[in-house]
Amino acid sequence: MEKVPLISLPTLEKPFYRVAMDIVRPLTASRNGRRFLLVISDYATKHPEELPLRTANARKIAEVLEQFF
Image (cartoon, rainbow, N blue to C red; front, side, top):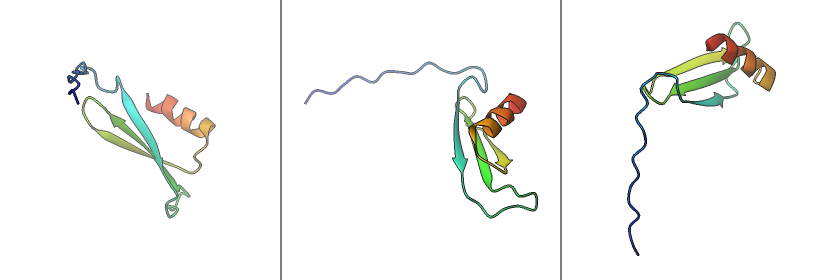
C-alpha cells in the first residue's frame, strides 16, 4: 500500500476568518432561563467563545451571530 503525501493547509492570518460552531444542550437552566450554549471556536487562535441561549432555533442563532460578528 502506497502512502499518500501530506498536504499542508494554508495558514490563517486573521482571527475569526474561519470558525467552527456547535450547540451544547440541554443544560440546567440558569436564573435567566438559558439552557443552551452556542460555542464558536476560532481556527486561527483556537479561542472559544460561549454564548448562552434560551432557545436553540435557527432564527435565534442567526440573531446571536449577527450581534457577535
